[in-house]
View 1 (cartoon, rainbow, N blue to C red):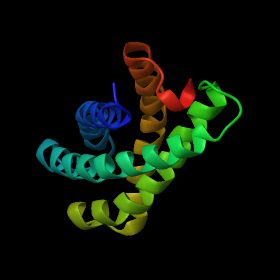
View 2: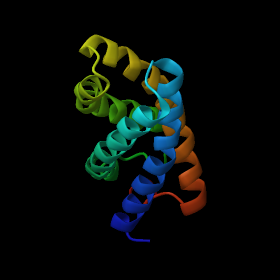
View 3: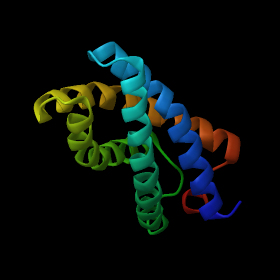
Length: 139
């Protein structure tokens, strides 16, 4: 599979499942209803999809230059954490606007989603690599 096709399949499948995970998480954390939570989760998935493609391209370019191959727990955890930091900077203002809450309240909601998504990202990436194999950069 080409690196570009792999990134596209990864991002689309990650965000599709992630939209459901985020919707449920937001409903449980906030006063937002299911519809509103789904809409902001879908918007977040669109932003995350674009960010995923950009971030994974940068990460894999870095990974290619590393002398140690493979994806250890540390490398996977670093990947998940850096991805989420970038996403937070993009999503907190959007969530505050959509849910009509303060930036602080949106940051609190996002903090809950971050915990959820750190676990989700690690598990999803591990599973994805098991199904599709490691990318060229990690071999």
